[in-house]
Image (cartoon, rainbow, N blue to C red; front, side, top):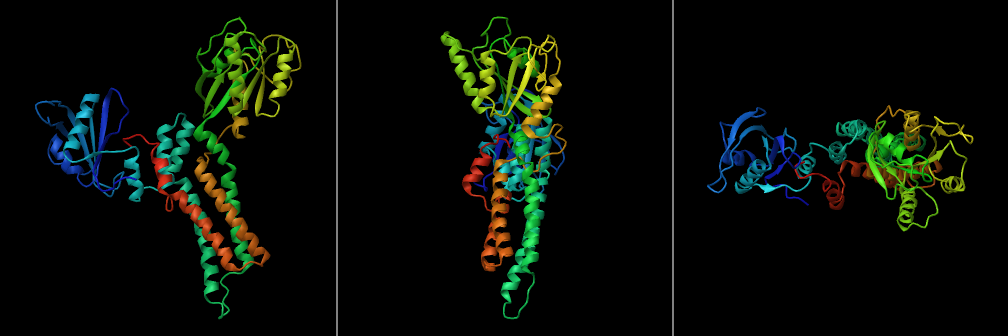
Length: 448
């Protein structure tokens, strides 16, 4: 996948201009390469050192003042010798540093290669490496909190405890099999079954929050639907916190999908405004209605908007029927006016008067996660981790049933227990395939 023997270099800060830019070098030649491109005194471990960028030749006379920091391995991010160079955030300067390092013997890093080396060198496990990418991508404080908890090892510790309990059962079952003639029984089938049941129950508790964790990590899509002029665009703007959608009294103003990602009580929600659903001969509006119907199919939750100041129309009733089987929140908009129908089981809001919006946000979060306040971080937020835990649970359930029934040889029980441990190992990356590793680390930016 990657060559771990090369010394690599990359810009670690985002593209563009800024007050500072950081170039990272990692590998056994890092200090030698830094010495070739910098004019400075000897670098001291973990101490910032002032330096100047050495001009490479007459054609490239780029100079800059630089702060260089040396992190010797194995106590560095990658586990190798690492040099971090902080310069002014000019793309010209940063590119000159990278080209100088390459001329001195480094290779341009590939996406995720620094973190991949941290994984290879045992600085972090695979679950923690995935948490690094999640932390970089976090768009809300809650996403950042969940990612940081996993980076600190919350999932690693949890699965480690499960694995230790399972290893104890395996060791005692194998010991009993090793001394059958002597009649030693290091564990009775009933006791082993009880221990396995305990592990299954703990996995179930972890998986209970997995859906909520996935929504926190990946975000959700909420689509606003309704007939024309019920206030969909006004509600969209109010929830988005800015006038993104055009609002007029003319029916059919919204012809296309308008979207905005918002922080909704900690969740990253992609909010989508759609064309009003009605029968129309206007070819452009008809296409907008078709896109509205298509957006419903991919929504995690629908906001069905009704105008409470007018009686329900056939289009309203048809929309309510069409969305009855979907996860939805029904909104009676324009609650600052009189109600023309029963709104007792709906969320009464006024998008223009800012009434009921906080309650609506809380209702959407409940519908998405089942938890209004989201007080606790989810231990599992990654689909890969959840699938591996579910696979482990299947093996453990089969092993538990075999022990309780007593009609299956213990060798087959042990086979399922080892398979469950293999699933745990895949979470950590001990048994991960090259394809899985490539898929994970390709998500990273080049400098990480």
